[in-house]
Length: 266
Image 1: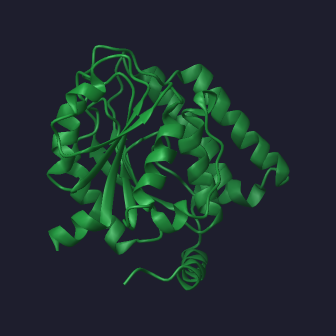
Image 2 (image 1 turned 135 degrees about the vertical axis):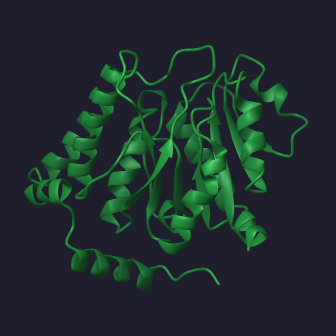
């Protein structure tokens, strides 16, 4: 069973100047999944060099294209190599690869869901501004998606390839973190709701600041969401469902529709 899981999934790790942590993250992922794909997003440090002696695929961006573009490239590389789902994992060490089996357990029972590793973060003077920014993003993304989403900014996820093949989402440096929010919205519109799995999140270990800028990136996410909501007359039903949840019967109906249009792999 473990070997079957290992060959059905690929891990995609976008990395930009992660020389301090990338080897540990990759080695941890390899303990659970055979195919690990690192998308080196134009790093100027030793990120790519440190991976040369590890059994990992390194896909290069010649310039810094942003996290969204790196994920998208990694997803499509994985699709070409026959996997059925992709685990995305940040390269900065804040996610523990040891949690990969817990997310896969949920993906096995919920093959038409986006599984999110929802971080538990204590309120401290160092984290409160990020927690508030994430809660704001959660509200907007949940509204557009039409169901409650926990930790919409977590980069630790499992995506079904049956969803990826349906999507066309713009990418680029200015949409680096918008991409991960938009894919949740577009997934929900196609019946792929998100499902959270509680995880612990370690403080970032690398000697660099986070690339996520709470004010700028939340503003960009809000503008993207605002455009979608305005095109739907503000989607008041979505707002209700984002606050109180989708009716169970409605969820079952949508999931049956998805199952019939996307047969599972044998």
